[in-house]
Image (cartoon, rainbow, N blue to C red; front, side, top):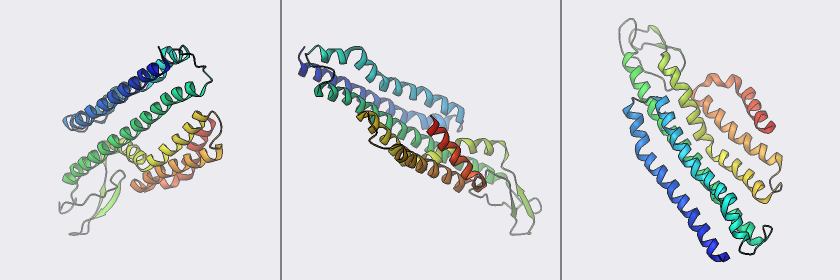
Length: 254
C-alpha cells in the first residue's frame, strides 16, 4: 500500500472516531438531563450514568493511540518512510492532535453538563426549602438566601422574631455536588489552557512552556475554582490559602 493510500485510511479512521464521538455526546445531550429530572434530581444516578457515557467517549479516544501502535505506525513504515522522517512524525502527531482535541471537548462537555445539572438542583432544593421555612411565631413565609448551604438567622419582617434556618441533609448533600460543578465551570478556561501548555510540551518533546509557566497557569485554574466556591459559601474563605497551596503542591509533585 502506498503512502497516500495509508494516509487516506488513517484520515478516514480519525474522521470516523470524531463522528462517533460527536454522536455519543449528542445522544447524551438529549438523554441525561431527562434522566436527572425523571429521578427527581438524584445525583448518584446522574453521576453513574455520566460515568458510562464518559467511558464510551474515552474508549474512542484511546482507540486512536492503540490503533496507531498496533497497525498504523507499522503500515506507514511499510510504505518506505522511516519512523524518524518528517512524514511519519506528521502522521503520528495528527493522531496526537485529534486525541487532545477530543479530550478537551470531553472535559468541556462534562463540566457544562454537570454545571447545568447543579444549577437545576440548587433551584429545586431552594424552592423546596422555601415552602417549609416559616416564622416560628407568626407562620409568615421567610425568604431563602441564595447561599442556603449553611445555617443562618433570619428576622421576620412582620413580627421581628429571629428564626434559625437549617438547610437539612438534602441541602448539605447538594453542596458537595453543586459547589464542585460550579467551581469547575468558573475555572474551565484556565484548566483547558493549562492542558494546552502541557500538550505543547508533549508534542514537541521538549520544554516549550517552562515549569513556572505551567504552575502559573495551574494556579489560575485553582484560584478561579476556589473563588467561585467562596462566592457560593463564604465560609470557605478561611481556608482559601491552605487549599490553594495544597492543590498546587499536589499537582507539582505529580
